[in-house]
Image (cartoon, rainbow, N blue to C red; front, side, top):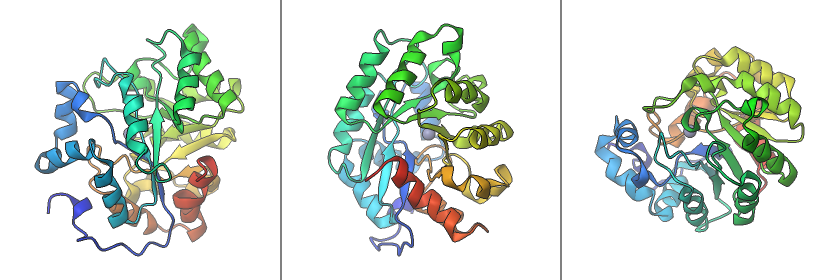
Length: 298
Ligand SMILES: [Zn+2]
């Protein structure tokens, strides 16, 4: 069967962990620009119609989560009109989708600092809507994560408002394969400024700078107490090649898969590969279960 997520025949996997996947892509894919849609479709042509339907119907996702033994998921959404085609309506989409089961579906939203006219008000609105994490995507939105030090004041307003309201900020780091994405903005070293200037902000570093900037990522993660590592986008079986000393940052690990982005066929398969790594059970439990529940309480 083409889609791994439907291949378990309804049997519930016996899971030793209460898993939160902090990073999956449930987004209004029908808004994707043609070139982005093509990149998204590549490699999953056979079940792309199913994935489009999944973006319209939360009950389909909940069934997949049951089949795969995943307790909660973070629904990554952010506006990116120029590269992806997503407008601010992506925020309402996430909240509406998650309303079907708010205990299991965590809506994320975003504000584009390069286009917003009222960054503080936009963050307040997201909090009032029930958004759980604010996502920034520098390569898709066209700025560096510390560009407030060079005059992008809306970006400082976003960080300040999130810090004040206790809203965690997830920042994409590393490369992106979508046409028009500027991967030079993927260097996690930019988060050094952010963590210094907004010391109470909870910062989630998505993807650990992979595949180019892991040394910078590890430095930032060890240096700043409120920076977390979202493991999504790193092939789980290669995690120890990317981060050989990952056990030293076990209190900052957040499990994530990036499903169903290019190359990620099943949330469960990634969990199984991660659990098979030669790490202690306490490190695995911290990433899959304890840390996500600390940052994003149930
Ligand atoms: Zn992602």
